[in-house]
Length: 382
Image 1 (cartoon, rainbow, N blue to C red):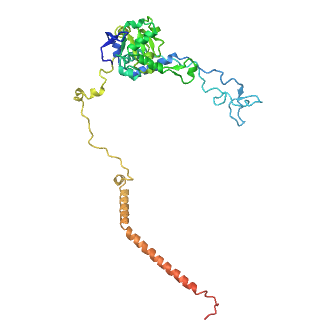
Image 2 (spheres, helix red, strand yellow; image 1 turned 120 degrees about the horizontal axis):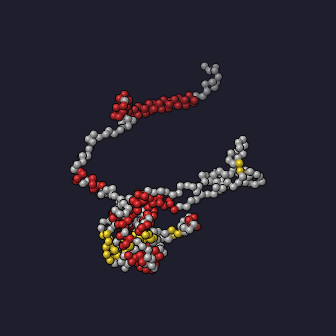
Image 3 (cartoon, one colour; image 1 turned 45 degrees about the vertical axis):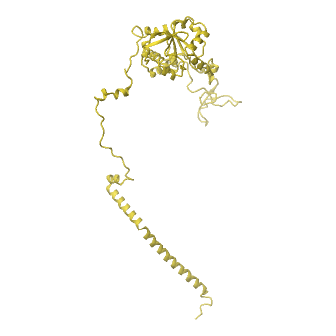
């Protein structure tokens, strides 16, 4: 919403020559959601119908071989003597077949939009052109522009030469935006470059006039510059891409006529949903805080859910017997840990005694082996 009730009027030389009232429509609420919706639907209304040929992929004689031949039932090209015979045809999965769901020209190409929505969107787009922050956010170069909205004298409408138009734009600081648009000219990616859409270009200023006394011929050849009569304001020009805040250059008669187009005698201006949109300031104001109930604070903290596998207290609530068994197991484990050294020493003594008996057995075996065989001299020894 523009804060200034008056707007400066500049001469073609860039000097202030007077003032005029800010149109009421430029205080309309900014609704980017409505602008985006209306722009999306409006941009669909200049499309041309397209479709593939109804004969594409079907210009061959083919029929299915039926069942019982261990092949798919897809239609197959007849004949012989060539690799094409026997190949699948017609289906979207076949080489040389038609596409799935071939496009038709009787698609729903255009969209109807409510008149009230269209007017709301145009009003919001007009209001956004008076907000410098939105104009800058849209990418326009307005560092040298003296004021937004930029209003020039009615002599703007009688400009007939492009050279004079460039001098006017340079005088009011808008030529930088035109040069930015000219420098952005690039060859389009894709097949559009072969379909009379070879170049892409950023949008520059929009010149809005009341009567065409040559201004169309003067400005139309500058890159990125568009012109529009105030009686035929177009959302596609006021908010390209659905993004509000286009840099507009108004003639004085054009901006003055907005009060007759919008208002009591013309189209209705949308009402503000909120007089003050700063919701945090409203809620925290003394008037509101003095009558609202105090914040309710819960003294009782909710219990945390604990895992009974890890927490003995949680297990106690679920199964006291299992908790008692786990406690006894824990006590036994702690007792075993305390007697670990004693147990190890006892086991080592047993292993040591076992080794001693094993050594005695080996010694006895060696001694007996030295005596020789008992039956060496037969069984007749005394």
